[in-house]
Image 1 (cartoon, helix red, strand yellow):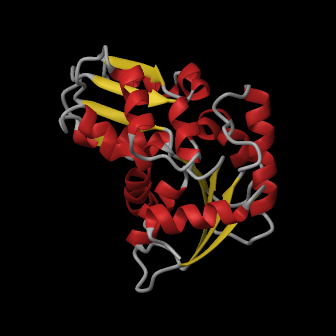
Image 2: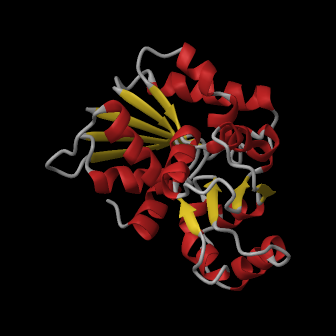
Length: 248
């Protein structure tokens, strides 16, 4: 089987890594809209338009399934994309919510959602969690992380200062939903900031679990072939994959 993985930039590499390690597919087509990242600062209509243009790209590659590895696109454009495709398209939000519900049964636990401005504004995570009975939910816009990660910064003083800027007044949550696929690239620093206490919900791991359980996709015996594409500077994505994910 051949899968497509779509993100606004390099954040989807965190999902790609989980899929590669699970060996669920023979071939993976990764596309990052690096010319127009980040999506999280853009309006709904623009997000939908960009996402449908990405779908046009994937329609040329004869894929069997598409993962929208972008929370913002999943929040605003998933339904439009599904209506215009002949193959299954899965966003990251539903798998993330299901993953949290599997790990946190106590509906009173303190859940923190960190995401971009657009994803936070959509309130899609809050609505989904409230429907499941959770009621101690806090959402925080943390869009600076995207820009920092896109600059290749995943540790050091700049990141630590940004963590402190966003989190210094927060109590330690029981669980954190990493509501942007860029954020798993700094998840160790996030967890360390909170004394390694919260459970982190990682979109990539949640997607793998979802594919196995809901689509009955079983592991392959070989590592998949990966092809990288981008709307600008494909080498940037390839280099980021080699640096952060140890993928060729």
